[in-house]
Image (cartoon, rainbow, N blue to C red; front, side):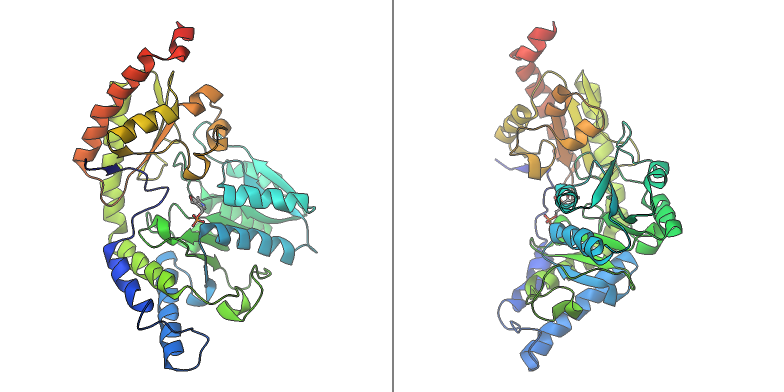
Length: 388
Ligand code: PLP
């Protein structure tokens, strides 16, 4: 059975061109960039080339890019790094209640260590209101962190507006752009951010590598202590094959970001319209327009998300309930609850995330399979029987 992968927000397959670019760095060009001999310098040269490519993708300067082990580390580094470096100025951090666990759990950690965190609410579409950000600022606020786009329900946040507010108040502003970098235009100056996280495995690069953009002049303490790599900001021997893979992925993304976003938006809307038309008692979660080009998140009443995922999987269609990180937990997604969804609706959610190899035929197969599966599950659903 040919499988259909519609979980690109969880991770993307590594592009064959990326694998090809990485391979020599496992074998011939295996040097340690800290070594002064030719092997070392070859590796160092490769990293510096990637630094320029990543900087170009987001409108930054190359010296403002630090490589990390992924999005989670970039988020941890940004939040803890700024919090601890600016403790003498204040202890207040503003974030939203729909952030990825990499931000939420870091905030909870900081809270346990004496920082005060404001978790801003969102409206029914998942949007943070910039005026709420403004109202939450106090003379103790040192950092604002709001994600660029949500990984579960796909809403794209008004980052440039929040960036303007942060700048006016002289407060550092971080955004988690793990779901947007390489998928839609991202420019750190247009967005007005001082720190931005990204991850290679969400843009057809390898897992275990990412980057943090740190605007020149931003005060933050190092996250990893040890050697002097990454201008003493992130110790540990660099993951050269991974970084080279990130660089090739960024290059490929840059070549086709606008066209691909347009193509995926058409497929996304075909899937949304088709599902709303063919299945009753369902709703779209997230914003209808201000959403990622590849994200479809729906709630289907009277059925469990897990049952739909397993039944789709039996037909070779791979999707997710909520986010990949929470799919092993029985708790409903904090993101869907923040939109005001009941526990039942949140439990009946499905996330489709489309990507480079998604075709129209695949969308048609989903439009054929899911209504059948929902009808079958509803026929034996105690939830529906109780409702009648
Ligand atoms: N932030 C967001 C919005 C994500 O979607 C993810 C991954 O799902 C992460 C952070 C974590 O990235 P990584 O898996 O590279 O640690």
